[in-house]
Amino acid sequence: MKVAIYPGTFDPITYGHLDILRKATQIFDKVVLAVAEHTGKNTLFTTEERKQLCLEAVKGIDKVDVKSYNGLSVKFCRGINATHMIRGLRAVSDFEYELQIALFNKKLDQELETVFLIPDNKYLYLSSSMVRSVYELSGELQEFIPECAVKALNNKIGEKK
Ligand code: COA
Image (cartoon, rainbow, N blue to C red):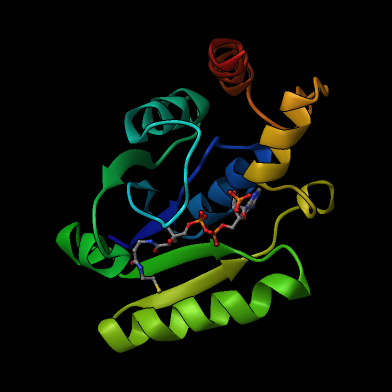
């Protein structure tokens, strides 16, 4: 059984992430969408909220589990017997940063391979921070994030006002 993790902050999860996830399920027997607790980012949503949104968003996609984790991604990977890590590559600008993470992770765990997947064209420019800032300016987001994330952003940003 080939298991991969797809780690990220998912603050919040977008259709770009779900596109990568779907592609990964075509390659692996199981894909664990891994919601990282500590990423050095100041997140809008708590880990539990990000995880719940992911759980809601992946309904209907087979072969997917959602888990949150603390600490190193490679350690989490090993703990659940995953052999591969999925990362999305959206633009050339992602490459250097992703290469650095992949090589660093390889140094930490020789057995682990990183697999890069490219999202569909329409999601190439999408990022969670773009979603958050467009939302704050009252932009329309239905096209980019699942309904549950739209609702959660509504509540969260409503709370802040
Ligand atoms: N669609 C939409 N957005 C995408 C995307 C896609 N297909 N692929 C990436 N993104 C976005 C993310 O939402 C994120 O947006 P943001 O910065 O606006 O929030 C951005 O691209 C880049 O994300 P990045 O910071 O590279 O990764 P991440 O947030 O997805 O996750 C971890 C980073 C969790 C993988 C990394 O911090 C980690 O491994 N942390 C655990 C600790 C550890 O092991 N450290 C050692 C690693 S070297």
